[in-house]
Image (cartoon, rainbow, N blue to C red; front, side, top):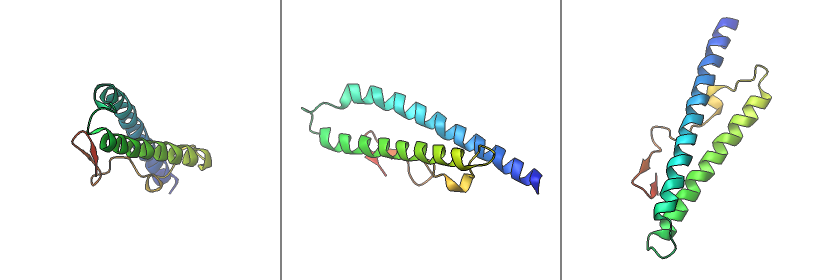
Length: 100
């Protein structure tokens, strides 16, 4: 049983690291995107601003959950089922301004 727990924890740790990598890529990509396309004089400004705000809200929620579960876990690793990754299969970014 302890061996199964160790395997699950190792898989969870890997999933969290993948989530963190996604976050770092998203933040870098959309910081450039903001510089290029987020200007108040553009018609798309409001929609783009709302989409980016939702994206960053999800990033912060993921980071908060990861931190909370790391601090509660006795081994320092959260359980995979407790974390919701930002881009699950049904939640992908479509186009530059639309979160689905």
